[in-house]
Length: 316
Image (cartoon, rainbow, N blue to C red; front, side, top):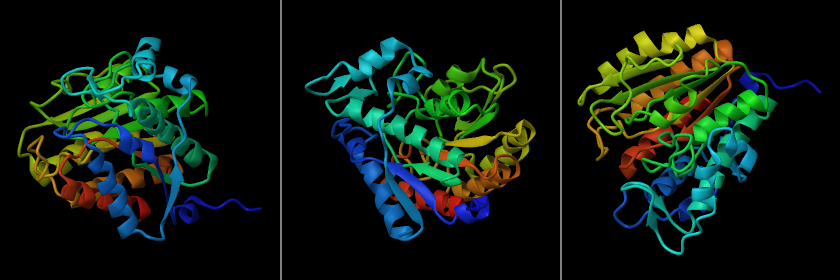
């Protein structure tokens, strides 16, 4: 049997999600709420009724999580078994359903990597929560329990034998956890545009790791032109020079002008623009292979528009 080419396989994008991700109960006033994920999955079902292939996310295994996280963090998330919501920090909640949600979110990332590297698809999107890019090797923080994109990258490197993985993070908040996990690992290129000053306070341009970290901190009200300029002149060329075998995306949509937690001033078309350029780089270096993971985004209407624009660009 003749294998499908990347161009043929991209007719659909595989989407990984799980109902358990809705059961991560952060409380009625929390920005990172279950309605976020419902908005994303509902919008994708409506916009692409025939072009997405939906999959139930498996649980990540202890081995897969342990590549990114120390045993103490796994124990604090998976074995706490709270009977009600508890706070791990002022922003990060552990509820009775959180452990299962975190296992499924990280498991979606692993399954998506397996799918694109096996040739089952070329592009995948993980519609999951809790998000992940603030979680460090040993600390859950910033709404994040496990670092899903780090688990995905290390699975691609250690289980599949890749040598170069790029992580593009366009969430409005710096992915401090992802940077901390990989700042000494030259196999991974981490690139981030983010508002500064803003939580978590990291992501200066001077933070370069072992030459594998590229940060583009941007001031409030940067808008579309400044955002695109940073990626066009600084971050995308770094990906091109790195020649990744897989592109991972931390897809946070909270730089949108309507988002309540930041003031970057983007619109949905900015996400489509950047996604198309990431697709082009993946086509050039990685046989088209991209896995994107939902991170932030806290205005539901903006989240719906932006996730549809992002996935539409993955489908192009």
